[in-house]
Image (cartoon, rainbow, N blue to C red; front, side, top):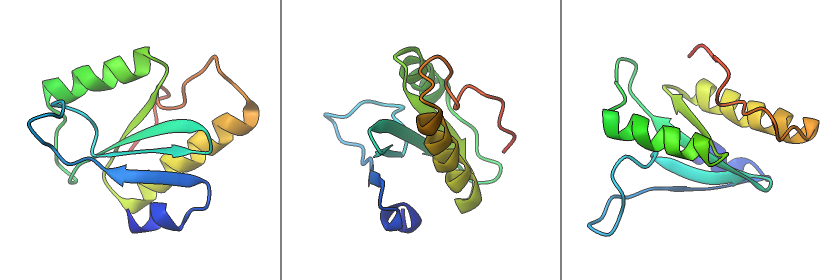
Length: 102
């Protein structure tokens, strides 16, 4: 979160679960420029639950961008990929669908 807050074109917040929230929503939500970004933060050997995977599919189906990240470097790679996507102006491909090896 600290690194994200230093990026001028990134607005982000940490999702905190409440009784009014939705299970499975990624841990960090925000935007890079005008594009919405979701990051699911996991420990090195952490696994995505079925509920989280279902939410990730819903986000992608709606045209959103969601990554599973296990380090600062992976979060930075996700932001870079989204910036490059925005620069290409490509609405037809979703960089979070690409097989990025984390």
